[in-house]
Image 1 (spheres, rainbow, N blue to C red):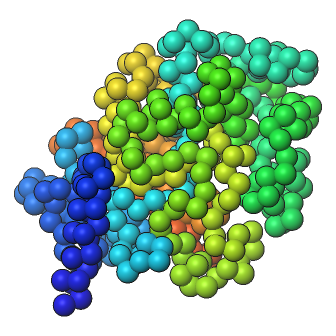
Image 2: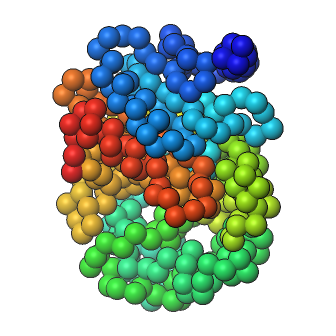
Length: 384
């Protein structure tokens, strides 16, 4: 009876999505009534066996989708529920995806370069004249994380990660973009531009502001019109809050007292991480994005080659990095973690693996990147 009820709930959810004109990416898959949607084609049996085993071995809340360019192979919704619902998480459950946002920002920048509005060699003094370091830092430096700038989300602007010092970023929003840029560029670089790779949110925050200057649109508007809509990502949003549907584990387990969390576990003030960590999405939408990106529907072949060129310090391309034998990007916020893996396989062509998880505030390892690493190695024989 429990499985029947779960199946009815899942079917009603999918029918509701279809009634809104939204494509159902689980169509044709078999649902077990609790955790897994599987493709019954025998050629995928080994991949599915591995994917299920890893889900059960990790035994932690997570949401997974594995797909090729044409088919969904497997999906899972493990050990947690949608907010205010008895429905387990599913391929349309919405999470904060954190730094996976950077891939979207890089795509937008590549689109503007293709339109002739920008070049990789443009320097920051074009957008913010009057700062000493601005004339030395290029768009390419920002994309490749080689600007040498300090991370605006840590250290020099807030001092530490105490709730008081991080309040504006995560909740209050009591600083303007102008004040943030002034603090960033007045502080200057910590190593010379182009010298070395340093993962730094500042780079993609500034790229988000450049998108707004060049288009006259908000970052939110541009991403929605030029990426979400062309990809059919109807469950995704930028610069919004409280549209998440995955219940944070700390809320489920009444761990609201955990340090650095808002009352409900969400990052309220997403506008100050736009470009570097503001997007909310689901596994189904992220597969649609990957397919469109790698299929040439968002940027040209030349732009994609630049995005996946890791011949620079740190092996960070443009919004993508080389994982353990695959392309991708991870992400993390206070309440959620994510991983996007794009794997070239010998048997199935290009395979996309999305793993999203609510953060458990303990010392456990982050599951999302580990799951993709393990699947790539065990199911496809791909390692770094």
